Length: 487
Image 1 (cartoon, rainbow, N blue to C red):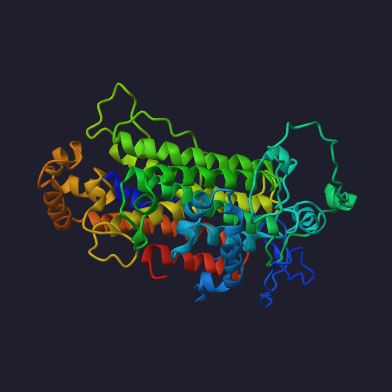
Image 2 (cartoon, rainbow, N blue to C red):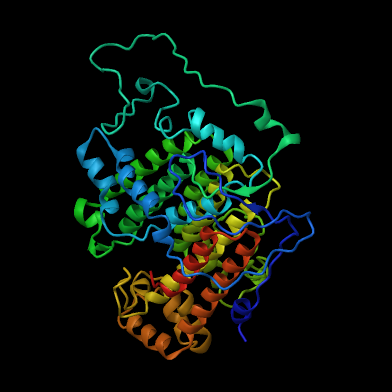
């Protein structure tokens, strides 16, 4: 049996024993964006001796329907962040936002925010800040520096820049003041009992927009690299505007996302999301170099995930049979896809007041990491489907790019004649057709699906650490939807 077959069957959970938080609705919530929901069952707080609860059969909850109001707000207000003094740049930056998308990444941010808000020991401080500080919905768009210093002209936002008609003179400094939080909110001895609030903070809504902006920027760059003519059934940005403007549009989106990120007021979140941008670049280079690369991927802390310890590359003096292709493939999958989901979810929980040493952000990271890998594995399976309904071109598009994904690697274990085709990137006449024939004759697709299900099941499993709520049920449904692609 292949080591990757046993990896798909071996799952490992390491959760410490934790208190069971009470689930209580706060009617006077900190966020004006909160959507009232029916009060869930109340559970009594207990000492730290209770194991994580056994998860009941999931309720049928549509994640998109649960947060329809918030997701609509995100879509309609996002375009305001993308304005530029150059109309063409504004058009390119917003181009992919006008095409249908499931918006999985911002949905994941909001669901985890709602599933954990109130559990972090600093949530009360975050909730106060959402009403009384520059982290309120009205102040999040305000620049940290004077607009004329930023020279950040956006006709959709209340920023104004200095004229260039005259030399620039020193201007008197201005000072904006905000009230200080009550001392009780910072008193470690009087922290409130953890309790779900079923709310969303303005910073978390903005984070959802930021992760979508970063994702779309990566699509703009990917479509240039991959020479993709279509995206979501419409002409791709490079096809519509040309490669140069598509690249510049992606760069502009990253700039706007970085400015919005800096205004969230949380250093750990800036570190996490900045790391995602670096991961996207590392993953693309890893994919370009192919199997056996020595490209650095950084180190990630151990998470609650599939037990794939053999993913680590062998020492350089050991001759690997197929230059550790599986290691390269799964590292690339994390860097290009799962990193944004994992770190985005973790950042959402940090914005909700979760401090170092509290479990909730570890759960968020583990869930997002496993969900992201499952998502990409299913995406790679769809490349061998004849259907284009889900946005994948099918018929071996990845093969034509020279990429050996999970189904190909599994198939090569059954049909060694695939090895020379993989080695030359399917470049010769007939390579793609021959590879497709062998892959369909093998169990490569079904084994990749099994691996995706193993990651998805682990994602569902880590949710047991969260208290029962509609948001947690929706995260379960989201996990099922990723492997079924039924939503």
